[in-house]
Image (cartoon, rainbow, N blue to C red; front, side, top):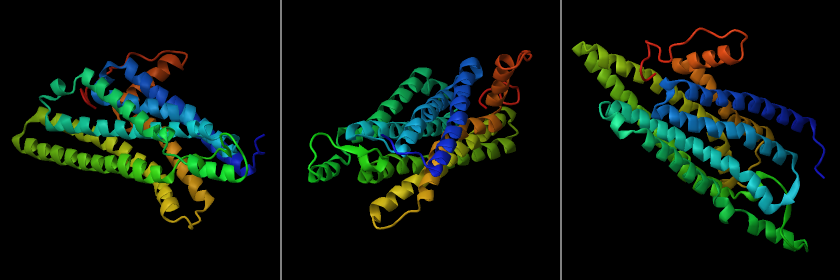
Length: 326
């Protein structure tokens, strides 16, 4: 029988539910917008949809499981392990989607004339599938043995118990901190984040270089193209910044737990880090709405067409000020 819920746990659950109620509808709206607006069908927005799918799953799956773990039910070790792994899969999927978006923006400014022949819809779908497959491999690694089962079994047998260990289900009881720090963070989180920072630095450098060149040459169309690329690159770099800001605190706490076992971390710090990581899934639709006009216009069209009594007049799917890539 699960323990009674304290006032602190009730507040935690309330905040998590609020995050989920923003994250799921917001990211469903992103997917819906790409579906109804032909102007949002290029490779970048396909990768954004993949990111939105992961964020929907965070709100619909990970947050309910996190609430369950917080309540602390007693369950079999491997059952708890299955509850803990989805967040690892979805985090990795988000990171790889962000990396794919960064590479896509780099190719748009590095080889603009050959971009459409290099980044085809088929290749984009293959890249998205590859990202998800790799995410499952990385996220399910604890299921294949890199977990805390041996330590839990020692304690279980020392108490004279037999069979599969029954534990109070908590993330850190089943997931190895060595896995979280050495493999997950140092291999699959930190290097991709640093690589993305370098890519966006190069993207901004190339865009500024082209803008300066075209201004002096008085060439209007290329200047307009790179101006739009600069604007959308800034928006996507902001998405990357928010992701890093949201997830790095939790990984830093994991490093402290591993490298300083005697250090006592205030519980409130852990909860803030968890809220930040889960809250990131709700941030992206807000950024799209305020920073990318194609999304903003399509969001309004969906709202007017489906949630208001009278439909709005037809909206140009590709606003003249931003055609074709913003």
